[in-house]
Length: 305
Image (cartoon, rainbow, N blue to C red; front, side, top):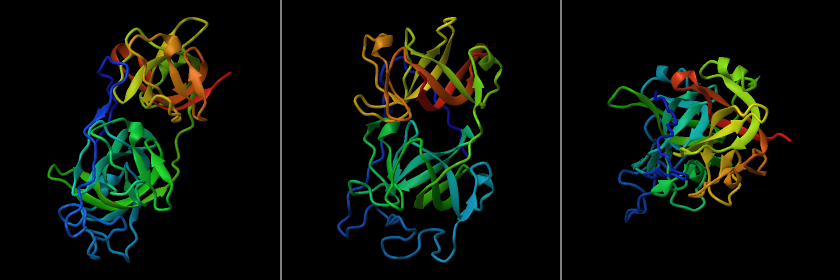
């Protein structure tokens, strides 16, 4: 199991994620990859079963919390939030992504999803990621044809595989389903009570969108919610999207010389919100230096007139 943390380490207005996943060129026999990568249904291109993929055995459902208890080579089904990691690559035509625990964003597992050679990607596969990409570039197609993006909840079926370090990952995902996950009820806080919240608590805070003097962006951007009554602020990490694309719960890159009026955030319902807008943000508490609380990651942004 691996832990994923978003680290806003670059002081830029629009940084990109790097090292994308791309499909291999087809071999002369028409089989993608160098060793017969899976076809997405748990079988290889030759019709034989992929490792651990017995057509007669339904995968056992496990949680991310107890994924480490799975047996090496066992077929399992895991529900979580799909994420494009900061850096990734392909091996044998499979791309390494992250599946995040809906109840604890600091807990996740590595999952390998087949890269499609078609556009749009065929069921149970994902589109190629460019060499420089953002999380919002992630596009996965579920078994029923539904388009899935970074931050969506899915059920992935694949093979629990132990690597050389002894860590288990979900290898050769052969089924991708749209799913729902139970999350804790967020605690309503204000700019005073948020200071008492524990790490990993899901909270909801209302304030006005603002930017800092230097905004850190690396997959997410560290902007602020401001209390108009006192001027107090809380840092929030919002997913960096693409200008002119209304991706829910994301923001557009900031220009080089920006002000609060430059800020553009997309609400959960697709509404375009400007800097200074009053919003209600739901996300997880992270405690930084000097016990300063911030909301990272933000999972939902709502207009709050």
